[in-house]
Image (cartoon, rainbow, N blue to C red; front, side, top):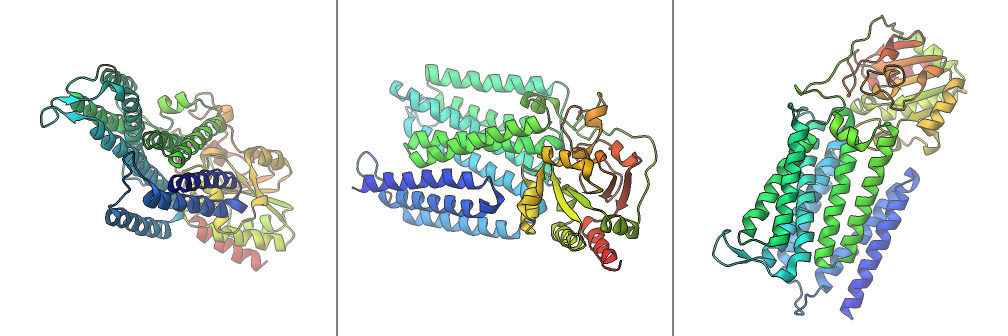
Length: 477
């Protein structure tokens, strides 16, 4: 009877995961979907704690450790979620994803020690039953993927918050390939022959997988980090699914498969949005160079500035204004001021919409999350294809901190690293106002020729302050 109840708990958890994931596809239902999936997870966890029994009929008994760990994790997670700034959300997502990979790797280590019997004390001679090869295969897969996800996510976290710089050396891609082949070779040797020194081989695989995760992410350029985060997320899902196989835990298996599949699909979609293959993202080191810095392409020409009063007049008497949010908006925490500007312009009869590029910001959906926090209507958020259709009928485009996603070099400069990447065709509008702190290149390390075009005017300053001052100027008209 208890087993049937536990199965029902797992079924409920699996269904809520699927429903939650579906609801996350729409900002209007995303919050509710998150809560539904979290509720299903709570049911699955409590069901496992109180109803699970092993083959010998033994139940879990170390409740103090279990609930103590849950309490500590809940407190840390809650505080982190409440205190994190929206600009720091990408690195927090990366860190939490890395923790999932670490858990999957630790599960593999624990289960390996369960099936490995030491013939001699220490890690020198180990006996593993031949019948355990299937289980050993899943353990090794979970170890490798979980370790790579953990180490790679930690490097991604460091790069996103500026503590770790892009780093590569001549022949690093060859080094990475050789390292991966060594890991796979050792894994094949361990599973196929089960040597007496299995523990040494196992922990060597663990160490090399961590090393590979570090060097896997190190050379990847800044503009490709959203793709890398999505890919590492899928790795964590696959590693968690391996844990579900090991424990015959249906909800863990379902959750891992959903995360792995969703992360993979998102990675493919983002690569498509950048018009690049995944292999090119991982090998191309977009935006990075061997010295660990950014590649800067210098544009020739002069730019013109626009005053706040002139910008206020142009926008106030426009029929349609399109706002293009970028990382500069997130850094300045200007989403609420942006929404205030939108409402003010609409009160004057101006149509206002937002153009969202798929890879704008530092993680998938970064701009959508920011604007949703400011209660911007989802109907006003146009995807790249929709926005490009409306730019020709737009009077003013206001770019807030976006750089690479509006760079014409993607269409005109065959030597540019971003050549071929679909961009927002802001040049089709009658006029373009670009708000930036300075003329420094964007996250990809590439200068933007758009800033020197005849239709473009520069409005320098912190996005939040500029928007607040702009609102004041419009009110005084």
